[in-house]
Length: 361
Image (cartoon, rainbow, N blue to C red):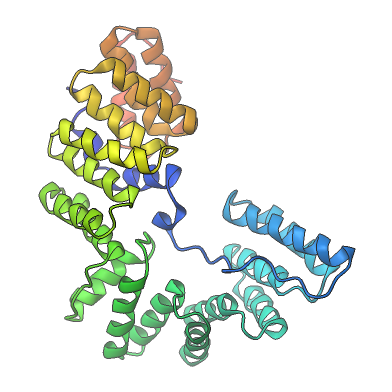
């Protein structure tokens, strides 16, 4: 089957799939403040500024629109110069635009206005780390953890700080604490696991750590070990939809679509709006030649996320096997339009379009 081998070793693609339909912590911990924007005093300008800060955070976190985020938060700071979240937002935007100096100044202003602003200490500490000002970074990260003992970003960056100082005992303690209290975070968890092993530590049996181990095994094309890790994830947290999703993915790697469907059914019950679970179940049904059920699931995935590139490739394969050539060609072409140039299935899609007598975009 031309579609069967390439689809199940795509670690970047599976992480993207998780991110498109499931909670955002899988692709990186948010640096958003734990509380809603602070409003000091009263009056129309202050209320308007608070609304603009919320708008700015939405542009930054949800739409990745730095210009709009900066404009909204800058206007908020003009309306209410005492709003620390406006400056925190401007700091995030500045750093994202590679202007660390401005970012540091904005975070400092946020701290001046709210000396207990844990996230601002964390972000300023990260800048100091990047500037190799380890003493200032450590001061800020210590303060962030004092104010917020559950701050994943503060722990991982303090661990990096200690690593940079060759204080391996302290670094190991922070890496382990990060893996103990934090969910799986693509940006940090694999590195934390690697450092704990390199420093001779014991990896904790937590959902975040096991997710990281399981995805590493997927990347290494070791589905048995991945399945074991994901089974332990759902044993620890039976309500964790992503654990069942990844268990289903591992079963597909093991070419056991029946058990994959069982796991994906659980994921869908727990997270019925998660497009990736329907897509994976579409693949499992397709492998069992249950094509109408496969088509139904791919349709549902696209309804939930019309820009989910990989599912168009899968639905195109279903249409092709159903003999619906026009629909298959349309889906392969839509996949090519949406998918990044590095997507491993682009070549296969082009081959299928040529075989079906179509023309690629």
